[in-house]
Amino acid sequence: MDRLTSLTVFGRVVECGGFSAAARRLNMSVTMVSSHVQALEDRLGARLLNRTTRKVSLTEIGQAYYERSTRILQDLDEADQIASALHATPRGPLRLHASANIVRFLAPILAEFLDRYPATSIDLTTGDTMVDLIQDKQDIVIRTTPPPDSELVVRRLTPWRHVLCCAPAYLDSCRCSRWPSLSSFRPSIFLYC
Image (cartoon, rainbow, N blue to C red; front, side, top):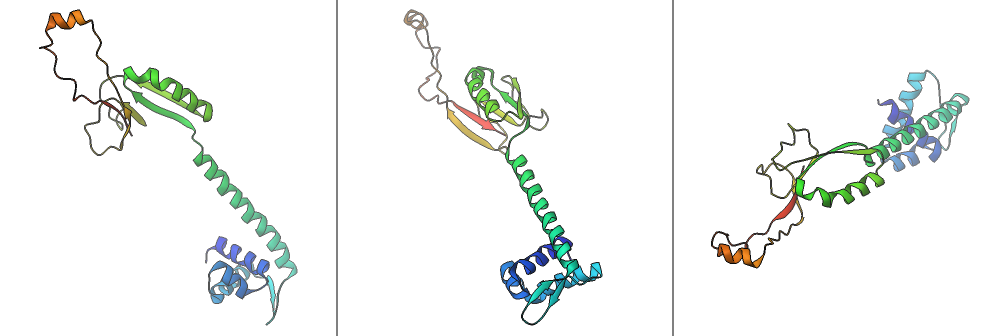
């Protein structure tokens, strides 16, 4: 039997004052609860509980074992909570690649991220060439064009508005015949990772 489970079951028997109450609390059969306690006693070669038809009480050895095992289980719960907290809090480097023309918009967001998560760092590279997330060892890529590979997780972050500016005299001189229609051009910013 699993020793940690047996310790937990033994603790519940002591706290609940009996096998039946512990079985209900642990959602186990009374036989299974009894088997776990018996396995502990067999392993230790000592009786931990005095059993009567109406009452369960700790032996002297059982009292010492219960106090120590309770501390062990509490330490284990604490260790689990610490590990969960460390996992929940971002830490380490974030490798980010972005199109060069949007870096100035990212700067305040990245600064806020670093303030919020001081255990992180950002390794930012820029460029307009397509990057391979695996080969180039990037965590996140922010682009103004969608990636060609459909297996990547892609999220549209925001519409991206381009404004073409020039003097009216320049447009008159070109007669606008060389310029394609821009009315259907609707660029966006994409995040993929």
